Image 1 (cartoon, one colour):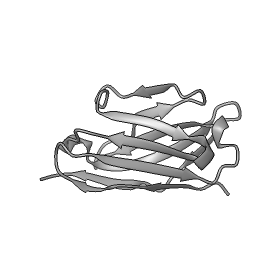
Image 2 (cartoon, helix red, strand yellow):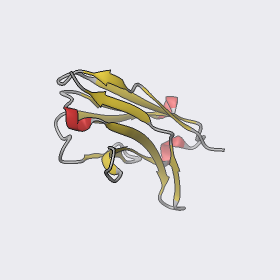
Image 3 (tube, helix red, strand yellow):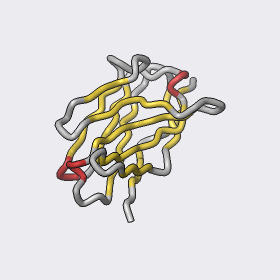
Image 4 (cartoon, one colour):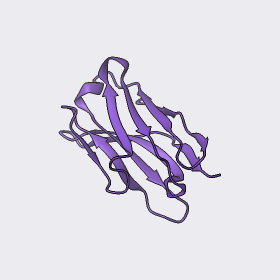
Length: 117
């Protein structure tokens, strides 16, 4: 059974930083595109950042220049470095693993990020 375990969430003041990590049990982790999504109360889940199997990142416009996604295939882990955090970044952040060739899609349980003074 595939597991994605997120960590690193918490409470931070505006302008602060957090680093999220998602560690996977997937043996072929390097074949998966990885992504971070978030869902705020009363809103739909949205893509924050994704990274392809060849390390190409893409970002939502709202986080460009502030967030960085990167992966360590040896550790089967994807990270989201979040800088200059804003109150509107407050949400539950979910890790996603996708094997596009077979349509396999896995989600973590989510980690809460709260940006507040």
